[in-house]
Amino acid sequence: MRITQGTFSFLPDLTDDEITAQIAYALEHGWPCSVEYTDDPHPRNTYWEMWGLPLFDLQDPAAVLDEVRACRDEHPEHYVRVNAYDAGLGRQTVALSFLVNRPSEEPGFRVDRQEGADRRVHYSIHSYATERPAGSRYGGARGGSRSNGHGQH
Image: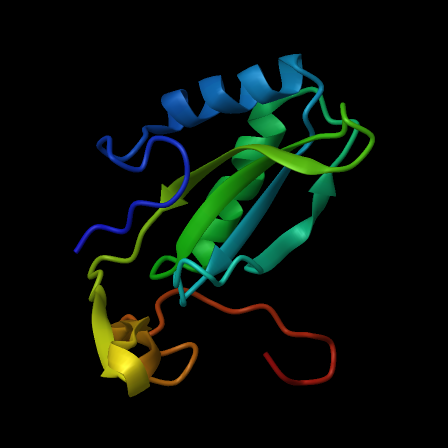
């Protein structure tokens, strides 16, 4: 099952040149970018792990692409996305968000149905990926991992 979150997610995966063009578009509009990753792409999981800090005051799309590549190298079996923020309304809002990496296997979701009193039906979405512990949800970990400075990863 192909996850469809963010802009362009119904299209084939973007090439690095296409990613660079989208980053350039965001920077031309004054939208700083950030890179995030996760192994739990549930639609309500909006808080992904940040790869470094948001890239404020950066005008070179190649520098943002370097961060994307570094994140993909470190987390090849995770979802990685680029967010572009617009502060034009006096608050930071996401103006553009798109996936730049997917795991080699995307297990998908199922819909759970619960029937209650008065014929009420409640639905919830369950991600098959979360049946495994975090960090091992998409097969074996490939690539290195960064230490947190305390001897742990």
